[in-house]
Image 1 (cartoon, helix red, strand yellow):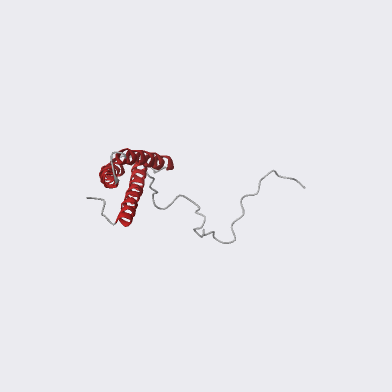
Image 2: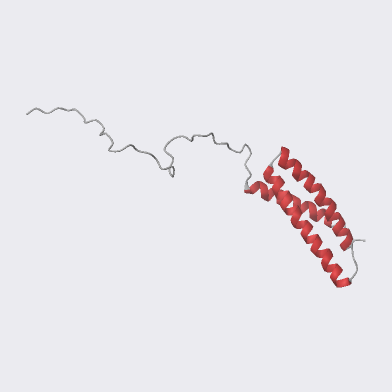
Amino acid sequence: MTTTNQQPGPLPPRFPYVPSGLFPAGPPRRPTWREPHPVTGSAVAAGGALAAAWLALFGLLGRDVGGYAWWTLVAGALAWLVALALIRYGDRGVGTGVAIVTAGGWSIAFAVVVTRWAVSADWPMW
């Protein structure tokens, strides 16, 4: 009896393997597109902090509820213009943070005006 040092080859499959698609077995069939500048949480937070400071500084210029509301509307409109420019040409995360906080600032100003109107029965905007 002689022994040979030959390694056996791979066994032929019993049936052809067809992947289900749940776990892809190769490269994707279509190209995958990646975001060139992904939105990050820190960028959204930075934009939100800047917008909050911006609205607070403009809100402090008002001497009464009407002045506060008008300054907040003007500051918010300027902030939204900057947010639109940032979303289109710059960092979309910062633009998103600016837009979200500006909407919140407008909501707070609206609530203050409506509360003052309900309490005094006098429209405080003019």
